[in-house]
Length: 151
Image 1 (cartoon, helix red, strand yellow):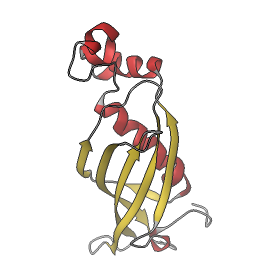
Image 2 (cartoon, one colour):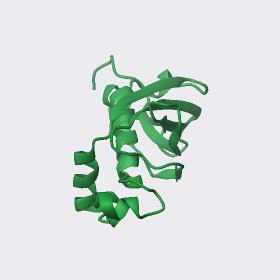
Image 3 (cartoon, helix red, strand yellow):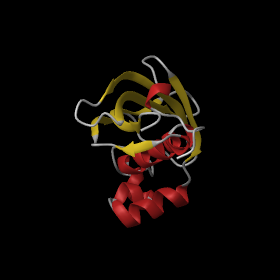
């Protein structure tokens, strides 16, 4: 790996990374739903209008995938990331509709060196995305492993 990548030592609690923007299109919402979450309110405008959502909306998993893409663009793609063991919490607070432009933040909440694998550190973070009006649509609490510089 190259030395210009972010390593474990480059992260600290309180650090904030900007996420987005990411446009959710009707075509992408339907394509994702056809593949992964084929519920009527993600696939069909008429059915969606009759649902509690009132309109075609993105799958929560599509929103989570968009968040991941934004985190990759902002942090992971320029880091010596080693993976993750999962997320602690994922909340879908409001539906994401076609035309929503998502943006948000990824805030580092803690760092610690792995006791069993000293070549890696554990970085915890909270992330949230909102639409163009500032309405928070989804939040997550998660973690990732990053290589310790020189390991």
